[in-house]
Image (cartoon, rainbow, N blue to C red; front, side, top):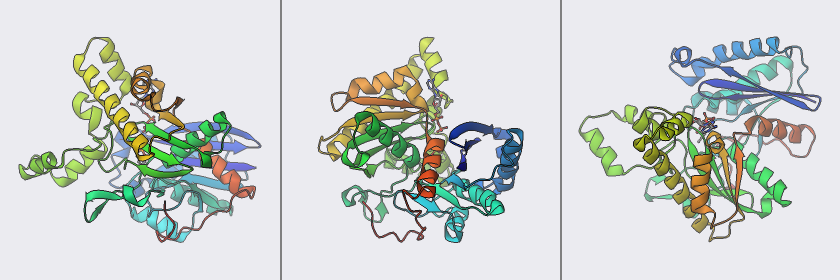
Length: 361
Ligand SMILES: Nc1ncnc2c1ncn2[C@@H]1O[C@H](COP(=O)(O)OP(=O)(O)O)[C@@H](O)[C@H]1O
Ligand SMILES: CCCC(=O)OP(=O)(O)O
């Protein structure tokens, strides 16, 4: 079985080549200066496609007969968890960015471009818009504004299944709180295999993170607009890319923050502590959402490599449930696993219904 996995991020495209039972992972870096030439994410298609072709040539994988090509799903309409065949309606919604602009929108389109040339199917797995939220979590506090499920679904589900394996239990019978801590942070309540509540990782919700603001005092934001300090477009950019740790310390790199703390920088110490504090409060809130019935708390993402962040969160939340740490992200593995489940007949590929899935939560 041969599978190609494509995982586009804002400044890299991660690649997985699965051949005859062995997975080889690689990353193509895209310098920020080059990415700035593209006004929209979809404008990067040809550039990324060329980079993927060059990568496959250089690694000797250009002649492989793929059984399927699989990409990270993007911001389409809300869907159920699962593996989706990339077809015309799905491509259109990725291209239109119906739920927002994000590099992940390129995943399915790139996978389809490679697959169609080889006459094999393309899939996406567990897109960030998986929606399993229960009704009570949807209300924001203002009629007309609904809380939306938009999170690191692929990695959260992958590490949740891995912890279930470690516990010798089924993911579908456990209650887990999974926190992805990367450039953005999302924390999800996984109740018996469904993510019934989660902060929206892109729209100013939940804890602040290295590059995102998380939830903000609304009136303070409105006053900034009233004073003309920022346009709404500028504020959206700050919420998603230039908020959080970056807005205080001018870096999104927590290794740099750690180094500053070690050198005695009190401001860096306070910002790091505040982020840890907000993550712990989010976990506490989700524990209450699950009525205290929590089998485990899972910390994952790049920040989970850092002992200070992990131990800071653990100290505040281990009274709730045992803490499991899965540093980094397992998106390529999850993409390959999803494609394998479909190819081997364990799971049927879903057809994207353009946001009309009636079952949620
Ligand atoms: N060993 C480490 N110790 C502390 N922080 C780390 C370490 N490795 C990576 N990070 C931090 O993790 C963050 C990036 O996480 P990552 O999951 O790769 O994010 P994304 O995929 O959102 O770009 C950065 O702030 C980076 O500094
Ligand atoms: C929350 C949706 C997915 C997301 O934010 O991914 P990145 O943190 O990789 O941008």
